[in-house]
Figure (cartoon, one colour):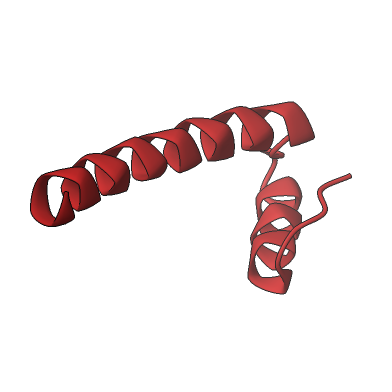
Length: 51
Protein backbone atom coordinates (compact mmCIF):
# COMPACT_ATOMS: atom_id res chain seq x y z
CA UNK A 1 0.00 0.00 0.00
CA UNK A 2 1.25 3.45 -0.92
CA UNK A 3 0.38 6.39 1.33
CA UNK A 4 1.09 9.78 -0.15
CA UNK A 5 -0.49 12.73 -1.91
CA UNK A 6 -3.61 11.92 -3.88
CA UNK A 7 -1.85 12.42 -7.23
CA UNK A 8 0.78 9.85 -6.26
CA UNK A 9 -1.87 7.36 -5.20
CA UNK A 10 -3.71 7.82 -8.52
CA UNK A 11 -0.48 7.26 -10.46
CA UNK A 12 0.31 4.17 -8.39
CA UNK A 13 -3.13 2.73 -9.18
CA UNK A 14 -2.77 3.48 -12.90
CA UNK A 15 0.67 1.89 -12.88
CA UNK A 16 -0.72 -1.18 -11.14
CA UNK A 17 -3.50 -1.51 -13.71
CA UNK A 18 -0.99 -1.34 -16.55
CA UNK A 19 0.99 -4.23 -15.08
CA UNK A 20 3.98 -2.49 -13.51
CA UNK A 21 3.07 -1.70 -9.90
CA UNK A 22 5.06 0.75 -7.79
CA UNK A 23 5.95 -0.80 -4.44
CA UNK A 24 6.25 1.18 -1.20
CA UNK A 25 9.96 0.58 -0.61
CA UNK A 26 10.85 1.55 -4.18
CA UNK A 27 8.80 4.73 -3.80
CA UNK A 28 10.41 5.37 -0.39
CA UNK A 29 13.95 4.85 -1.70
CA UNK A 30 13.44 7.24 -4.63
CA UNK A 31 11.77 9.81 -2.40
CA UNK A 32 14.50 9.66 0.23
CA UNK A 33 17.23 10.14 -2.37
CA UNK A 34 15.40 13.09 -3.94
CA UNK A 35 14.72 14.69 -0.54
CA UNK A 36 18.33 14.30 0.57
CA UNK A 37 19.71 15.78 -2.65
CA UNK A 38 17.29 18.72 -2.40
CA UNK A 39 18.25 19.38 1.20
CA UNK A 40 21.99 19.24 0.47
CA UNK A 41 21.79 21.49 -2.59
CA UNK A 42 19.57 24.07 -0.89
CA UNK A 43 21.79 24.08 2.21
CA UNK A 44 24.89 24.71 0.08
CA UNK A 45 23.09 27.52 -1.75
CA UNK A 46 21.98 29.19 1.50
CA UNK A 47 25.43 28.76 3.00
CA UNK A 48 27.16 30.32 -0.05
CA UNK A 49 24.72 33.20 -0.48
CA UNK A 50 23.85 34.22 3.05
CA UNK A 51 26.64 33.18 5.38
